[in-house]
Image 1 (tube, rainbow, N blue to C red):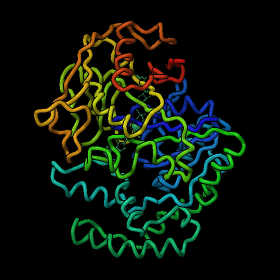
Image 2 (image 1 turned 135 degrees about the vertical axis):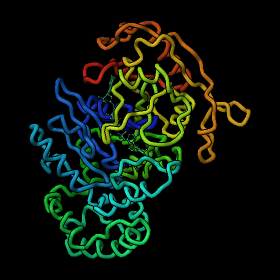
Image 3 (image 1 turned 90 degrees about the horizontal axis):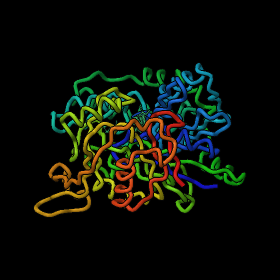
Image 4 (image 1 turned 120 degrees about the vertical axis):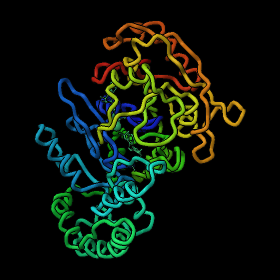
Length: 427
Ligand code: GDP
Ligand code: IMO
Ligand code: MG
């Protein structure tokens, strides 16, 4: 059985949820290993649409085990709401098949307030456009070694003492710097404990769960959130999220040996999108960009914001290949490009008078590159009904072949619509 990482190769929203759901048919255990409910992973099953923020996208397949690893930051209120919503829709979300690492850090009410206050406080050019879900402040507390972990929900005295300690610092910031309301220990404790006890049966040791699954011969899938260029180290810093989104973090974020990962599938959208602030060299502000935005329904699955759209950027993707080492690519939303007369692919950048193959390493360097484009003919045909390679128009096949050539990685799956069966599997 293989152990496969699914990761976003761009700035998120590549269609990871759809591909994880699809591949979950063949795999027993699905693990989230980083990020939190800043993610929005959409799965369409017939006429039903599910947006998963925290629970792995394998949950819709009965009999599969879904794990939330130590590398995730977990908002208990959001988790519980997601559990209830799925249960109302007939999905089994009991603790026998859905589990949370005791070591996962908890997003507290003061993290969310701090995230929002900080964004409001920043001047226009330095706003990151976070999702406001408390992700950054929660990871900060983890690194500062003052965080609350999911396991603490089973120990109210410890939880209370951690809240007391945290609020000394947070309240000083709220009142002295941001001019927002201070929080009381009781209010924070009560808010978390409205759901805290309900989460206790879900707590587990994810690392040993995976080891047990392997002992039974099961394969495990690691579901990445966000995208490579939102990675805290390797992304377009500071316009990034606060976790490592690259494939290698599947190991640290779930407690397994790195050598166990034998397949990495990079999810690549057939064009590029970005939500929030930060450089985007191939961004379009014209009819082609509007086509991608409207035909692709490019609105954030978490915040509802309009996604910025642009041409496929293979210089950016070359860096993703270097950072993640994908074995294969799932190319999504190819159908959205139908009807565009010509397609541009960014193959390199001009930067400081030179042609470069990768994004510059200087902070915000990507804001100062000029894309070098190749132009290819587009196609008019509707490809949403394509079920095999030969059903695709020649221009579409050429577009995919060029991507494979530029990146040196095979495209093993082509997605031509949001539904499960709108996926071409190539041998
Ligand atoms: P994720 O965050 O990577 O899981 O992606 P999102 O769910 O945020 O955004 C992807 C969107 O595109 C969702 O609305 C999906 O239903 C949709 N989608 C996925 N694959 C395809 C595809 O091949 N074609 C079209 N038209 N939509 C797709
Ligand atoms: P999925 O998993 C797209 C972006 C935010 C913002 C930046 C930092 O659905 O692909 P944060 O709240 O994480 O501190 O915000 O990261 N961002 C995403 N963009 N898809 C996501 O997740 C994202 N998660 C965070 O818009 O620019
Ligand atoms: Mg998304």
